[in-house]
Structures are given as C-alpha cells and as structure tokens.
Image 1 (tube, rainbow, N blue to C red):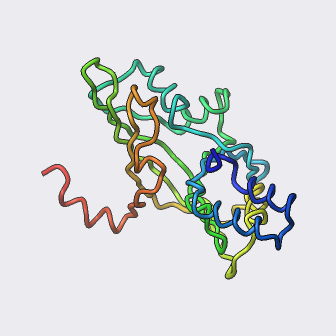
Image 2 (image 1 turned 135 degrees about the horizontal axis):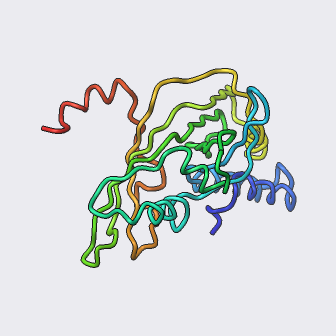
Image 3 (image 1 turned 30 degrees about the vertical axis):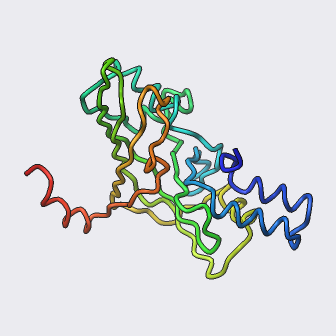
Length: 217
C-alpha cells in the first residue's frame, strides 16, 4: 500500500509529524527510495517550453491498456498497437489531446538526479489461454528522453517532488528508446509482470544495432 502512494507524499507526511531531522523522516525517506517504482505521470503543456504535472496515472491493470484492448475488438494471439493519440484520449477523455504527454520518472528513488522519458506509443502481442482470453502479453514501449536534471548532490524527496510539478524543457531529444515489458493476463487483472514495473533495460540505438542480428532468423 505504501509503495502506491504519490511520489514524495510519505516523505512530506514524515516531515509534518517529525521534522526534517527526525529519525522517522530519515527512515521513511530511505523506505521511499527503496520501494518507489517507476511512476507514470500525465503532463500538460502550459506554454512553449513548460509542462505542468497533472496527476499520476496507471496504465496496467484494468486501465488504459485494457480499455483500448476492448475498443480494438479484443485482439488475441496477435499483435496490436496503441498510438500516442489513442492513449492520451483514453486518459484525458479529450478527442484532441495534443497538449498532453505521458511521462515516466524511471528512477524516482534517485536524489541526485531526475531523468524523465516520454512514452510515445505501445506495441503489444497478447497470447491466449484456453478460454481465448489473454494469458499474458509482451509489450514494447517506444520512448524518448524528455527532461534531465543533475544536481551534483542529494536533495530531499520533497524538494525532488516539487521540481517535478513544473518542467521547463529547453532541449529536444530525437532518439527513440525501446523497452520490453510484460503484462499478466485476464485472470490476474492485466497486472504488471515481474518486469512489468518498468524496470527492464532501456534499449538505445547502438544496443539495437548489436542485438538485431538475432531477430527474424
């Protein structure tokens, strides 16, 4: 239950009840650093370079991925994809969600840096069980670097969380990054698999050039 709390919320609570130097605060900060999983956020563009964090979101479980599987006619034993527009429309309820982005904080326990990636689209292959429902799905995320901050020293979780509220993007990244995860199937409620918490390796272009020799042989 604790690991599902919004980033920094537990640390803020500890500071309220004990203060920054209190041992309870330090223990809870350490707990957050160990237990916080990669976080998915919805951001909205507020001007040319600034994005505001709207809320934390969940894609796995019976949320956007499941919703769009239903909308696409429940593909099974086949590949299917979720475009950026489809994903954002499902999350926001808007037909033209161009001002929004899904952003992943892939190392929320790091206090000396912030590294964010943007989720561009998803490509999924769903395997059937005996009832012609998904037993599990392998999922490829296409990502792109979004924002990076290197502090050079550790900061408090509360300060880190504050920095995530509004992001000024003064650099554009072009290289695609890929990551493979899997989702459990219908019986497990489309929950993340063991590498479904977004802790698998990011595969950059040079690594893809090396590994591609083993595909499609």
